[in-house]
Image (cartoon, rainbow, N blue to C red; front, side, top):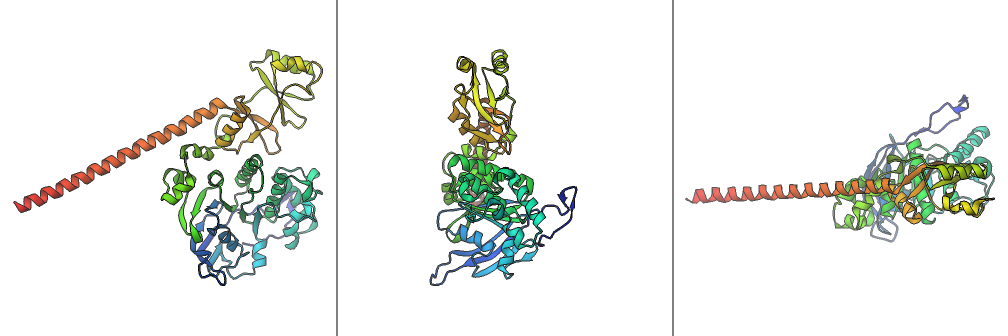
Length: 427
């Protein structure tokens, strides 16, 4: 993991390309606290591929956060080795190690006396980056997590919503361009809607950055949505199953894993498909600054009974129906229905389905990084995909049943052949 150094810029861009992920290998990692004979983490070995998002999920107290914190040695292992890339980091200076590993926690962990910019610039400054490079990096990071640098640069954490604080926390963790990002229940302290959007943001970031992410959660639905692979952990971080979300949903290793999967495995698979993978369609829109008569003409003559009114930043603002025309003769202020929920292209089909059902209108607006309108996804598209998933599960169950029947038939045949051979020898 080479330390990032100042490089001259070419055409306004850094000469050094962004660091991609590095593989992580845990070898017989154990943590025993003084005075406690039972290890908190015992003999954990795991290999995480470069650029992979791996989720640690398990019951409270199973050691998942302890295992995560041993990777950057916030908790020192009692025994075992940690390798990041080609480097054994078990014995290196832990402070230097932490500067090369991004770390994001629940409730963001921002320093309240520092501005947003100062929080994000913290590690680059420690690494000796120049003022100009650090300033550019802060603006780049804010843009990356969907926050306007001009608006948020000089704010303090107390002036941000919970979701904005978490975005800044992720920006700070990524500021020095580390190959590895550790995340300890980072979205656990925000409301469900904000949490969904933050999860979508992390998926989008990972598509762009290809970091190696280790993420701790107790929420199996979150694990399915975010993970390339999921490590289901028992007590002392013993690995019950380490596999892809789809493999765990369709073939849990034992009853313990089945308990985490819970009921409705087929519907949980909606977390494996993204809105970008299904049909996002265009929909009639109008800008809030357009003349009223122009908006009315579009409503009257259009094939749809409604249109989506966009604000000055092209963000979804209101659904405006033909029945609203009488109340909108002079102003749109009292007409239409405010858009209460949107989804991004990285949202799951489950997120989209929940948004559509909540809205009761059979569609939900799809937005980009800064909330700008992209299109809509409708109930028909979502239900078609649900039916395809359920049909695939039904066919898989039938195939599995046929395999079991064939296995039983082969076993019966072998038993019969054994009886026949035994009978022949007695004769």
